[in-house]
Amino acid sequence: MIRTIIVDDEYWVCQLICDLIDWNSYGFEIVGQAYNGEEALASISSQKPDLVFTDVRMPGLSGLELIEKCQPLSPDTKFVIISGHSEFEYAKSAMQNGALGYLLKPVDPEELTDLLSSIKSSFSSVQRKALEDEQLKRQLLDNRLKLKEQYFLSLLKEDICLIDQFPLALINDKCSSAFARGQFQVFQYTIDSSVALEYFDASLSAISGRFYKDLSALCYDLVSVKLHTSVVCMANFQEAAFSEVNRTARDIFYFFKQNLPHIPDCRVTLGIGCVSDQYISRSFVTAREAIHARIQVGTNRIIDLSEAPYDSVSMDAYFQPKDRQAILHYITGTTDKNAQAVIRHIFEKCFYRELPNPSVIMKLVHAVLKYIYTLPVSNNLDVSPSAPLETAWSTAEALSSREQILDYLTCLLEEFKALCAPPDTSATAAQTILAYLDKHYQKEISLNNLGKLVFLNEKYVSELFKKEFDVTITDYIAGKRLEEAQRLLLNSALSITEIAEQVGYRDPKYFAKLFKRRCHVSPAQYRKMYK
Image (cartoon, rainbow, N blue to C red; front, side):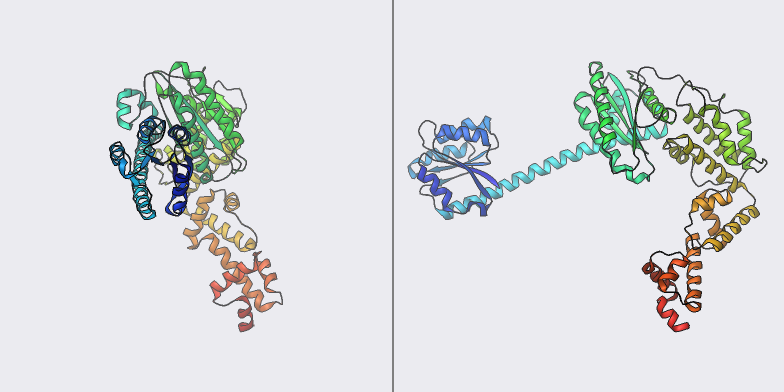
């Protein structure tokens, strides 16, 4: 609706114009009437209407003077002049001052509706142009933001230390940013939960949006990048703003710690990096180390390395030559130890003692991963793991407890051993799985349990079975169940619901659907046709 005020020094004229047509049906809403120029000026100043119909000659403040005085008070308000024949020169002057049109007294309903149609079209055009301009402005801002985020994301994935090689002017030129000489600090928010990663995306976006919203007024510029289960946020600000920036970043943490109810078993951790005015990468590194430290000190808290970042720690004391030998011997099958024992022995040196740096555990994880992935090349083993090293490291960074680390590296070690094992060993594992399925097909069977049965990674179990028997585990189980269902339909008096439950289906409708898809008739029809 176009909000409209009617102004005339004669009450009955105002009322007549209001009642002359159905204004709402034309898209106009009468929001007020005024009976002199001063009263109209006050009403326009407070209500900021879209349109004003005003008489030219009024006591005190004329229509022309009203238009002039309203310009600074309500610059977007438009005017239509109402005048008598003898006042046409006034109307002409008003048109020159920006009035949209004029009406002669007495006002003719047809002339009024024609004018309203013209004005509405004009308003729509202006509003459409304003909307297009706003959308273009927003798109340009979004594009600049995406460019900045992509630039920093590429550095994080490649080597964040590269950022220290570029002057700020070059960085600003590359990603249309406005970073300035001052302080840089990184805040990394990480979500830990047992649910799948796709549930995190909306929450990570919410944290990122809140960071931009709450800190933009305090900073020269800032950037927020989603990385795996984290949001890595960098703020660039004056030294005087340090306390306010840190308080705000912490407030964001406390807000989301309390407000992520849609993610089960959710824990949020904030890692605060050191403040830097020269080596920006140092703040990124220390924020990441703070997040890594949650393995040692716990999640759902703030871990602040801003004032006293830890010195780098050599892995020689934690990942020794004998540890490397134990991994090699396990993968090549020249030891009696199982994978879990090998991994636990390596990590007990940092799991159960006081550490000089709480991020040592993740540094050791990275060292172990790198070594495992170099083994096939260095020992001429024809091995293609299911995921590259970068993906394995990303998976490890999302782990939040010691037991998760042990389980993950144990499974990875088992996968590499299975990949390196002779063909007959794999065949034996496939036969073991087949025998287990033949015996337990009516029960709930998970890949995880099958993996534990043959000491292999669950993903590799599925691939191994398909390769050996040219059928997936799921399809094989379904086939066994339906074969037994056919036998029971012909050789027992059990109901179809009882047969469905006996072969492993709790839902008889789902059982009937699968049965018909395989046998092309329903269970009842099959019993009737063949019994």
